Image (cartoon, rainbow, N blue to C red; front, top):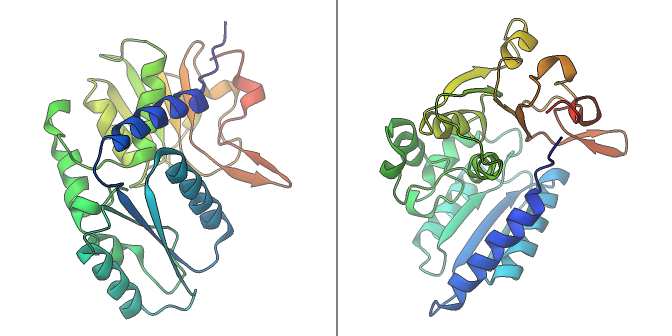
Length: 253
């Protein structure tokens, strides 16, 4: 029988834990979010962050910059937040306007405030870890952590199983591959150049899809009984859909 993983319920549980932890602190943590430009999806994400912070007791500091902000001004803003003792975490909302290269700016964030886990130091510590306990207090990309938490909710033994990741981004694909390797899974990473995608994915005990392509994965791509985590968010007309064709695969996985 198909089991639908309830991400909302898990998120609510985590928020309650965080709220309790924060209530015992002398001062609420401060999170700064830098938004450059008016990307509609980015505004939605910032709205979600605002709501989540309010629910758990984190003080949110929003920094809105114009779409034509100069590289020098953006750099100055990041440095200022790094030096501000009231700010414990900094998020640079991506994507940036076309004239700004995110690869230049994410390394400017203090690694100890890099809550998105995109600083080269945090990524390097993740990629070089040989065991889970070596991660310590390393900031990990939150989406990758969420994927792992959802997989753990199934209760299946991951050790020795085969995982396939569709997507190789620094924010999701690569870090979730590393986290699953630390669970002693055999991991394959696929992408838009992969030949015969269905052949690769149909062997997966755990399939994580983060390709940014609506309904890319259908019934022929999945093994019966597999765990499937769909990270994709795509707009088709007036609907939001994932990278997995939910109706086609829901009775099989």
